[in-house]
Length: 105
Length: 430
Ligand SMILES: Cc1cc2nc3c(=O)[nH]c(=O)nc-3n(C[C@H](O)[C@H](O)[C@H](O)COP(=O)(O)OP(=O)(O)OC[C@H]3O[C@@H](n4cnc5c(N)ncnc54)[C@H](O)[C@@H]3O)c2cc1C
Image (tube, rainbow over the protein chains, first blue to last red):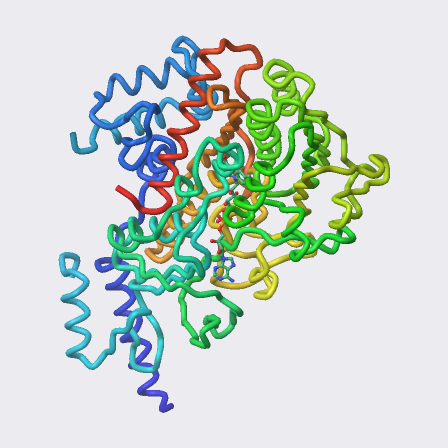
């Protein structure tokens, strides 16, 4: 390949990938989305549809935060949630509550 | 340029003489740039189906193809309830329509027979070759038959493992139905690591549930190569209460491991456990990653696949990720929930990588419910985080040791809810 054409090509592909990363590519899922998606395994798609497992959709943010904090401290009784929520920071609890409260009602 | 959308951009490029293909934009000179990467997923079980679904949920411009030989997937979770006559095989059978219709996953029903990591393509049984930019492999397990003299795929038609659900489940169920009252069922569980460590406990429980109702003088001999554990102790306490005298647990760990099996006399032998004869022999052999993983050079000498626990990228082959039972994700156990979690994390990591970002610090969550009867369940939960590139358990644990009947019932209801949730989530049902 001629050096000239090669350089042109390189320049072109560099510009193209720049455009692609800046404008064209899909946005990667953020922390809130990835962690909320984990909840759906048990609670069902969008937090509904898993029989006796409580629904997450349509709840107020403050209700979710209160429950999760209660599970974590043990003040609110649970079979399994207490065992899970001990892993979460206050910020993460807040983030998840906000995410589920924000789902279409 | 920031506002321009993908399609317009591709059109523009097209006008400029740049070809766009399924695997991205082929620039003059052959370099591939950009999104619309082609991701192929091998295996439509808990890991693969979930990953295919979430790849499309996270980036609908991705070209995602799932390859799975079967038209339907029969789950191991809840297959013990089929053995006990509580649920039908239909109940644990799922199709791939949701993944295709709701999420645009392309589905090819075929078997992958080889993978060329250098050329980035794979061969199907039907002779076709498929190219990929990223490959995700979730083939589940294969059995190490040669570790037990006399055990084989062929002999599993007489001494079923029922550790892959389907005809094996039906076979063991028929044997249980045909057995006379007063008969003996041997359950032989392998050493770790294997698929679903608490599932042999659930199996012993639910077979006892069935026998107690229909053939109450029958017995279960449970030879357990995992040895004793805190979790087992909780089951044994439950068995005392529910099935007193029916289940005899034998420590089959270390020298107790089963070393030979005889399909003619329906007997098993281990060094310290001696010769054990049953009317039914449920022989669950030691396991390794599904065979295609070895064929593709993804396994190490343990028989399982070493991966980065951050994105499940193979440590042995480039641009291939391995998830589910096949990968080494310890301390996560090999379960459907783990495979589902890994499928999501892997999908997020691939999309993040393709868009040039870095993965946030997230938790990996799992739980496994086991039924002792339809109204009594125990669970084990685990939450993990990456610390210096390695997963560490940060929360979780077993059900409360002491709990009321109501709590065990509640967990049994949650077990059913979990099953509904995870199968909808995995198979893209809405
Ligand atoms: C009795 C029993 C009870 C269980 N109960 C639970 C439970 O309650 N909860 C839980 O979380 N887990 C449970 N499990 C564990 C769970 O079934 C597995 O951990 C889970 O299926 C692993 O998912 P996977 O994607 O790795 O493999 P699989 O789900 O087995 O999927 C692998 C898929 O890959 C396909 N495949 C293999 N090779 C190829 C190839 N070459 N080309 C194309 N496709 C291929 C196979 O056809 C299969 O569909 C249980 C297991 C058993 C045996």
